[in-house]
Amino acid sequence: MIIDSHCHAWRHWPYLPAVPDPDSRGMVEMLLHAMDGNGVDRATITTAAIWGNWDNNDYIAAAVRRWPDKLDQWADIDSFWSPTYHTKGAAKRLEEAATKWPMKGFTQYIASEDDASWFLSPDGTAFWRTASELKLIASIACRPRHQDVLRKVAERFPDVPILCHHMSSLSAHEPAPHPDLNNVLESAKLPNIYLKLSGFGYLQGRERHWDFPYRDTHWVYKAAYEKFGARMCWGSDYPPVMSYMTYRQSLEAFRAHCGFISEVDRKAILGGTLKGLLDRARPVR
Image 1 (tube, rainbow, N blue to C red):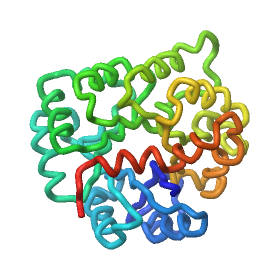
Image 2 (image 1 turned 180 degrees about the horizontal axis):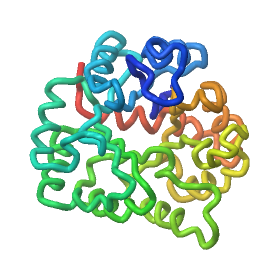
Image 3 (image 1 turned 60 degrees about the vertical axis):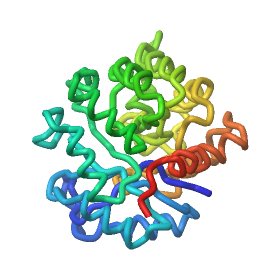
């Protein structure tokens, strides 16, 4: 089974520059078409209530209810663009969201300038405790410097799986001695911290994000694999990824070109690891 750990869908295309088909390019039916055409069995949609899509949680929830055997939802809860970002009442908002939407987990995008210390505050601790009680998976957009806090959260709430988007925003061009990479690798010591094996173009950098199969990034993925092993989950980042490679290439960049990964672990990273997490998470059907 292949499960896409990181993809999106929107009613309206949220990015600039403008596209000629804003009301169809990001729609969930396009995601399902891409999955079916490339042998991907299931997808966990990372909801992002951004720019003209403030109802994205509702939109994705409706899609999950319509295609329950194909889709799961990481609901957007208090990401940095939200007026409720890191404000009081987060635990209650998370509980209410889990009642309203068929979510197996939540996503939160941490502001790049933020140190994420709110997660360790009384309100932040209550938020994570609620996630634990509800058996939710956490899908977190973070920077390498946020790993210090995430490790403390992981220690306090060992039953909450924490999936870091796009290799925790590492860069393949970080100079030695690679402090960001080493900080992310330190998190491999916490068994409930996972990496989404995605974002080849992001690691490559904007100037050459089209350079498939991204061999210049492989040293980062290899270093992470040596520490995390199968605690990684492949993700496409569809549809934003389509600006520099196809859905199939987002799959094959890992499956066909990361030859340093064993066949057993390749299958786990393609879906087995995430399936295990989803099976243990809160039931929504």
